Length: 276
Image (cartoon, rainbow, N blue to C red):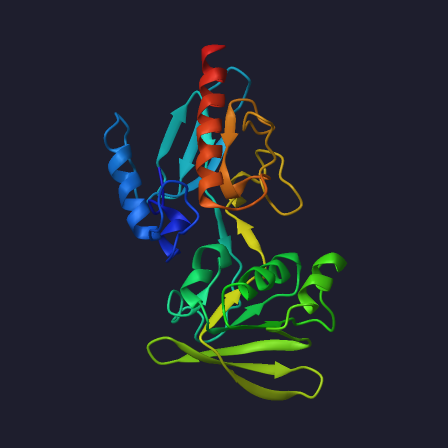
């Protein structure tokens, strides 16, 4: 059951770190996955969203309530709802998504080789993205809203050692501009209250991920970031309920890692069921 088959992968343009596939695109990978799934005896429910998951007692079936009012019952459940990138919610961001606005430096960085890009966000993820991109693109400008970066000192030291990186603090992103694709960005200098425009060809937004776990916040234990806490078998705090991928506490939010976690959760669920 899925609201959109492929989820966040559908929004990824370039994938160049997927073992055995030199280069592909998100929609192409999703199409191949869907074709593979259809070879098995699996019911696929598209355009469906889970509202809640309940299990009244240890021996009861799980009941998954859907947004459309329907209900599904099962002996076990695997949650793989992923996460969504936290957005800036400024004019131009949605219009230029996939046309210069990106959220995954590992996935889309190679598309901007030799170009000038911006990274929004001065936490660990933003600084790490800047360091990674500096090895690919021509120039990176890092923008941070606060008066100082929030990343670890060791990352900041590495950041400031790079010759093709600029850091702008006290900067509030106001608008993304472009025609067919991004060509500039307007930001507010919070010290002088002056609006400024910078020319660039790509913007990587790195202000965090939001796991899609709201529907189970009263069902299983979540981390302070809202991720489902799982054990080494992919099982949550509720026996029989497993989770995999970006919705969980597993680090490094990558497609290939999420896939392997899905396999692990499936084996964990199988192991759970044969012992019931």
